[in-house]
Amino acid sequence: QVQLAESGGGLVQPGGSLRLSCAASGSIISNRGMGWYRQASGKQREWVASITSSGSTTYDDSVKGRFTISRDNAKNTMYLQMNSLKPEDTAVYYCKAVPLTSSGREYWGQGTQVTVSS
Image (tube, rainbow, N blue to C red; front, side):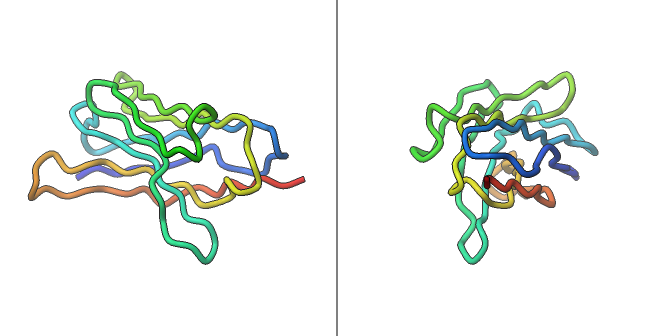
């Protein structure tokens, strides 16, 4: 079992920055791929960024160059550094732990609200 807890959300002005954290407990995540997703009000959840167990990263085009995903395996934690925030980045942000096998289970955190507004 993996428990994930996001933190770091809040209200920020356009152009500002936030750093989200996803702290894992119950099991190590160093051997798992991890990802960040977001869900704006009235919209479906969408993928934002992913990081493999070896540290390779991929990003949705909408955040490429502005967001940076990273992980600290010693702290069992993943991060999302968000710069140059835009109002359209407003959403609840969720972290996900990818299954270890094709029949394994994925895990989600409870989400943290990010609001970009002046």
